Length: 302
Image 1: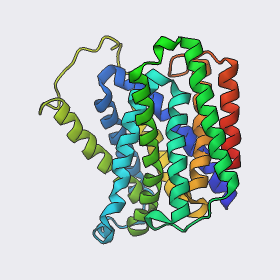
Image 2: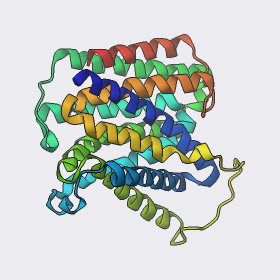
Image 3: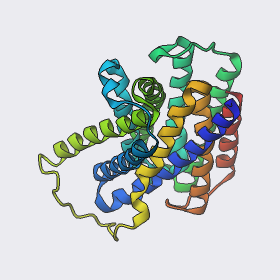
Image 4: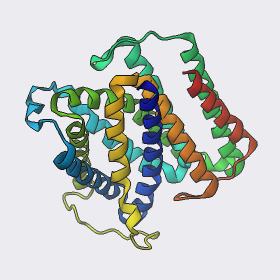
């Protein structure tokens, strides 16, 4: 059962890897916050259908759940927005790697101290060595970007985006723990759907504030070429990933969940960067290859 759950978590990571560029392409057409809204709506529709046909929980039990378990939706909104903003600037693989590194560190802390009602798992030297290897890999991938695009392209704005991506990633471990806990009250599918509902509410409020009260205020977008149907599937990928994570977290724990997600996300993102599939093509030089090998080795050690 743990092996099957780990494989499922890898596929969940692949779904997240595809979700990022999908939302980014949509954001070029309608805006970042608007794309996040569409993604959350798509997830709600997907999970809503699942609730109707296979749901076995009870939404009314939400009144018995501690308020902190609602944080999963807040963390999810932060993740979707940061990935949408940063993917065009950093590339899919680098964005996912930064986010997953933050998620990995938070996952280790959650497991080590038993935060968010999880069972404590002792920190082993191999896990710390794995984190160090991932950090080295990140630095090498960062170096490869400077070489391929020029030092001038790595400016203050890029550095801020990297920091925000790391902070957003650190909320990922919190999201997994909150979603897993709230599923015990209202059901796995229902808990996943609640995550998207909260995310949609937060994104809608942010959009209204940014538009100064006018939700449907139009803006000229120079890259607008028309919305393709596949651009609307970000919510579907997110719903699949979140639901799978909710199902397997009690079996494999937060740290192993995050590392399995990393395999799927980084692997999928590397393929997209190298081929230019749904994102701009990034030249794969030797530093990038070495960095990615360090990252995969670090994930394996963790």
